[in-house]
Image (cartoon, rainbow, N blue to C red; front, side, top):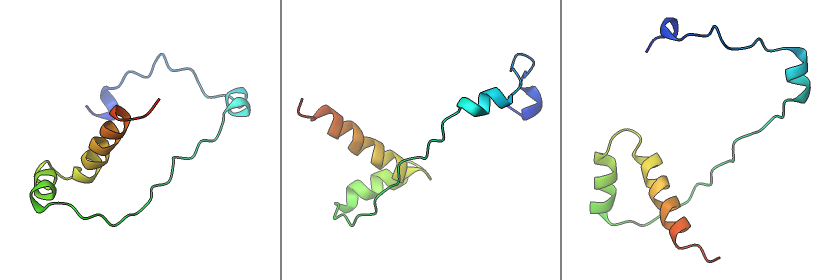
Amino acid sequence: MTDEMIDTSDIPPLTEDFFSTAKWRMPKSKVKIELEIEPEVLEWFKAQGADWKHQLTAAVRIYAHAHKVA
């Protein structure tokens, strides 16, 4: 989809009032770690495409959420 194909006719204009109540939110920073992982697992994630690091992070997040102690 190109920008020209997007219908923006129903988007209200951004006013000073909007910006006076807007909140600045910075994304959470990431932490670099060193990790030992089995070569087959690493190769599988790399074979998933260019965003393999994002997919690996998502898999760890899902695992952590599923095993969270309430």
